[in-house]
Length: 322
Image 1 (cartoon, rainbow, N blue to C red):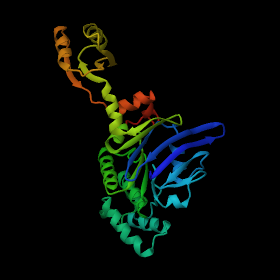
Image 2: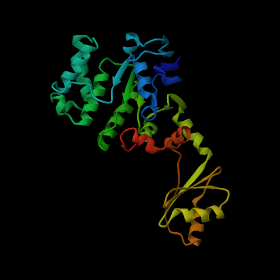
Image 3: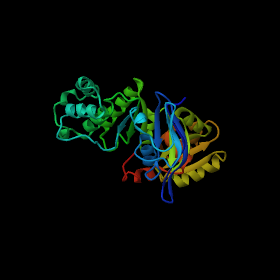
Image 4: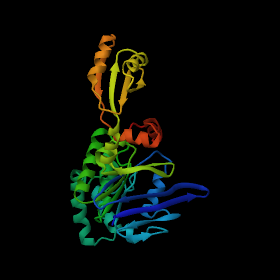
């Protein structure tokens, strides 16, 4: 039995189908990534999963209990929800915010403060416990928002674009915190535009485009599927198009692609060795300043499955780099 299961889950707005009969499951203790550009249907899906939107078709199961119209308070007690923007109070201190969240979760009064102090230390904010939330940095605010979602010891944590807009150090700290939470037994449902982040963190992922899941599975299995084609990348000091033309004549059994005007990627259904290509370039008087065998990435899987490049994903978040 899966901890969370979506079965033919559907959401419509008038004549528009935002989520089109999708199926996926999340196992207990899983770290599940939900990837797709804006407008793909991620928010509509999450809102159905957490009970903020009615289900127009299909159903959701939590720990075996099925919800065909709307997820109710029985399932919501199992959830901790971390929105992309903080919903805590600027005038309260970090500790006061957590204690107040404990009250909202109907926790016993005697349990609230000890739990709040435990969590504020766990997320590395003990030094700022008495400081007003409004004075926190963006990274600190994100950490406290995660702590607030954990107050009632949820079994599943929903994280929506958790590291978007953070500096490199803060994003790294948040990712490490998420790993630790998952390793301690918390099931995590993560939405992100950062495909590399999903590859680092997630056990399993689903790619959503135009309301439909186009690929899903364990990250390791998806990466293994890309090993069917080997690739080598060459970076040149001169134009790539002419070099690719010469290489294609010398090596007709491989496929060439100009990534830009100085970079060539070479693809083959069999294992590739960079040495023959380097030797050809040397004989042809071409200057190569980098040559490497490329390891398949989740980005490669995503692009192949969806037909979308990184530019589409970047544009969906106002041009921010993945």
